[in-house]
Length: 120
Image (tube, rainbow, N blue to C red; front, side):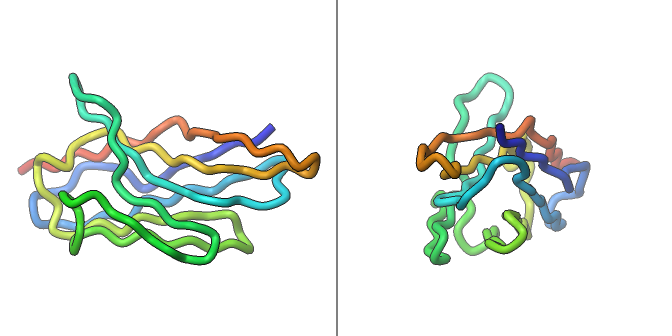
């Protein structure tokens, strides 16, 4: 079994910054893609940013130029640096990882989420 634990959420004023972190633990041989999603009340969960094991990144258009995703393969962590935050960035943010187990099987895992609120 694998657990993903997010941290770093909170309340921030518009224009401010936050960094979210996620660490994966458990029966992990390797991790392929790691992603951050978010879900605002009454809306569908949406992809914010993703990063492959070789460091290739992709971003939602709404966060390009403001958010940066990074990972540490040795520590099984992924971070999301968020700058110039806007009220519309308010949401629960979820970490996701495609994990290869020692058996060779690959499964996707989600974290419990961390709340980000952008408000004055």
